[in-house]
Image: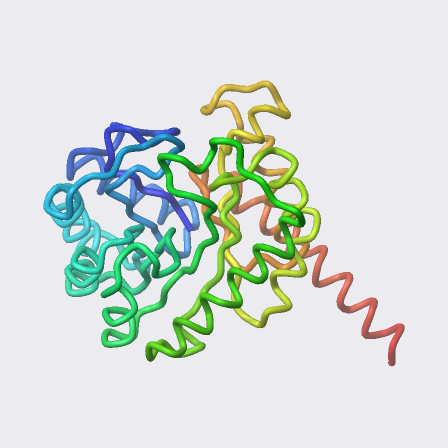
Length: 269
């Protein structure tokens, strides 16, 4: 999943793709580099980010989404927590809604997803983007994330969303300290046992910067290491800025996983 932010203030590439032409050029580049889906976002969710109005989010998003839809053949995802934005995005060609609030941010979001039949990403976040990094606390981060996602799955299904529409995301960096992110990554396979596709959003995260002592734009190698671990432990989708490099990492990990499975099948035969 290639990231396309049309925001002035995203932590990694804010302001880089605010014009339609630059956004389309980047989308086409990610398609050429091997992206399987492109995730467009018009509202920053970086730590401390202030929210924007639905009208402003639509103003930023729709012209770019419509142009990208014409320019590339890939499925498109839209990163939004607003039902009105999601509905217009689906009408403009989006097939996945990436909701960082897991349907909690807008009471109408579940209805939009159920009515349109698009996919939805349910992400764990402690707090809000404005508050999430203000001393987040857990007794057992993996267990608490599992319990949260299980509860949100039940809510989604109760509101008419089908199991096949649901993707899960543990929310790396969203209300989590370095130790929490590392524990989630170490036990990522537990998330996959819930029986749904799991997305790993690890690209250029602050905890990677803390470990490598690198600024945002220089966290590619650290990201590749984290992505490799997540994929080996069963991640179905990796959300990344550097598509070509992470595509290579994914290819190697996929080959290793196939080898491990084949050896296991021979041993158990």
